[in-house]
Image 1 (cartoon, helix red, strand yellow):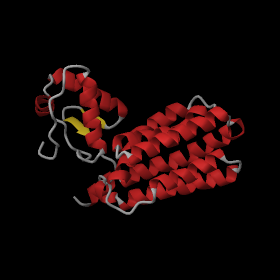
Image 2 (cartoon, rainbow, N blue to C red):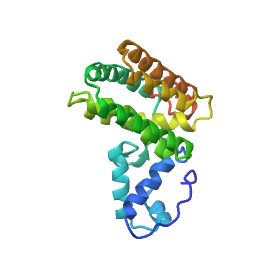
Image 3 (tube, helix red, strand yellow):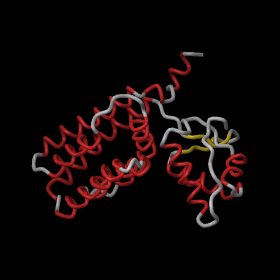
Length: 234
């Protein structure tokens, strides 16, 4: 437990949500590394809540993919490898391109307004130094095309990818490696998504994901080793 930050006891109202939010922010801020065990007793004491309430908060994080439960071992922060994230980005490239192809002739004013609003929310969180809000807003920004493309399976697939993508977004934000201008990078993406040139949009999508993966590769020291790599070192 020495690697965990110190949490203050919380007020009585909506304590489960507050516990889940505090843990989520700490995980996404890199204060609790992937693979760290979350021991119920000490955490419940720090938050000033019952172990049952803490367990409910952890269940919420498990459902969101930030935490996993290992039978007979305990509850742990999800650990990702570069290889796992590369696989997710590969699938995302195919799905998101198809989503934009489907959506392109049906983009209406409501879509344009909503994508712009989500971009503005992302920038506002960035300027306010709200890392948790920034990650949520980036996820929401990129998720809109899955919601609006007309394929009812797409939103579910995006949700399935979300657990690893959100951790990937967090790693990109907290890694001490050179990063592209976040706002300008997404402004270029927004302009292409609202434009009239589908091939240019698909090219920008591909480059956008390549830039994201390049940052993750640079931050690979903060990621868990792959199973094969771990076996090689034994």
